[in-house]
Image (cartoon, rainbow, N blue to C red; front, side):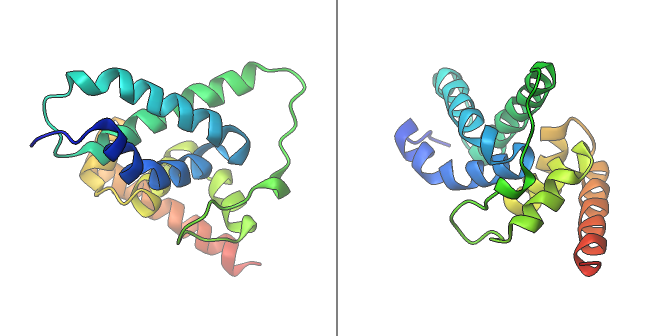
Length: 156
């Protein structure tokens, strides 16, 4: 498949990448992770041979960037996250800040699976590839994450 110009690719994938990053790292780090994700993508883009799954490719970069940001955040002293500051990005995703807090409170694998599948729209095989696990493990992590979110949501 022919690769579109990077600007077309960026415009097409930017919203979903941003929403996934908000789900993974929250709004404070999402902007930085978004920029870092697309800088990495821009550098690697000329070497891509196959453009059939660009969304999966860029969401894999976004997930790895989110992991790096979380590790760096853990090394920063004195940082306090304000969970009430979490705002949903524009678009059709949930606009309730409490839901975004609940997503961010999920264990990392569940949070990643929920964000990549339910926000990013990736099939479970691609979620598994992005997470470095099997399709079934990705499906199970997403299922457990959604189950936990429903428990929290029903308990409100």
